[in-house]
Image (cartoon, rainbow, N blue to C red):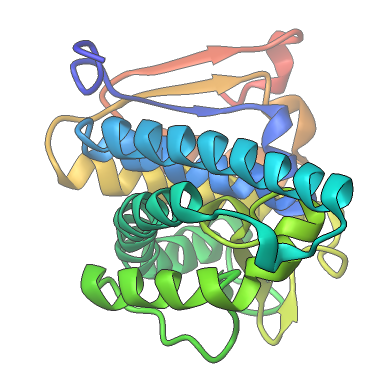
Length: 259
């Protein structure tokens, strides 16, 4: 943890297509990794949230097994320990959720700008970022930690019976998603291969611009990405990263890398 923040880098690799086309876990990891790169102290917040979630899931699993064994229903359980971990979940979850919401607000215009630059005027719609919370559509999302803590505490009561039935936590930052859109349509399922690659590039370039604004240029790592792009996108990417202080490029075929 002491090393975090000393050497910052942004990596773009072929696997980044999963940021657009893959599961929500890929996008949550993108946000959380970027949070820690921007503010290393948030590594502790992320670790605390993971620890609380593991402990709470263990308690829910035990409660689920107890209900099935006793057949006495939830009312027969002593849930005081679970109540304590509900409070921990509300605090740690609110801290992580607030940090994510603040990050998305910063990234939103940077991603739109980067996507337009990568697409070079041929975009079918503006790149959009929206945060989808598992707390439900009726919960107002804002970076206010007190409001988010209250919303999570309310959700513990609302989801209690279903969570014990399932034996796992059904809400919280671990079930949220970063929704990517092109114009009015979601990118996942509607974007072409070229649009998806452009969006993945835009996410990484926006990350680079954000970290750059907070201090020295991060090291930009391009791992065999030119082979995945058409000639036009290769040239545009090369122009966009040309001003970076340090760029490391890997390529299986040297001719894939623009002059």
